[in-house]
Image (cartoon, rainbow, N blue to C red):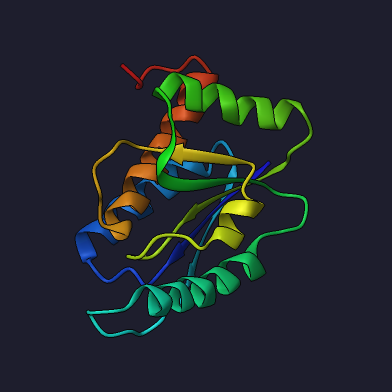
Length: 159
């Protein structure tokens, strides 16, 4: 079983890096985890809809190039399915049970994910209606993946 988190942009904030490293270290006892960063597309602050689409397409191509053919893909999007921690744990466990040994979570850039990435996703996951910085979302996601494995193993932590 392996879990990969693909995110757009380079994580720069030290406090986020430290938090992510802590959960990656904890996860090593449960699964192999890889964090993959793809470069964000440089663009001016104000973009037309067409320019936004071009940026998302280029970032999407970079993301898709990193997804293994046989992976089960969760794309993180605001309008995805909201789950409890217990349900996410069950969904990950179901992937493992039904032959998906590679799970990929995708976090888009500041403009979101291109339709091609959404089309490749097996599931759309939401952490709520609030917009969060994608760097912070990576920390939240790694923690929830760790929590999922603790729940699967009936180990204390998740309450």
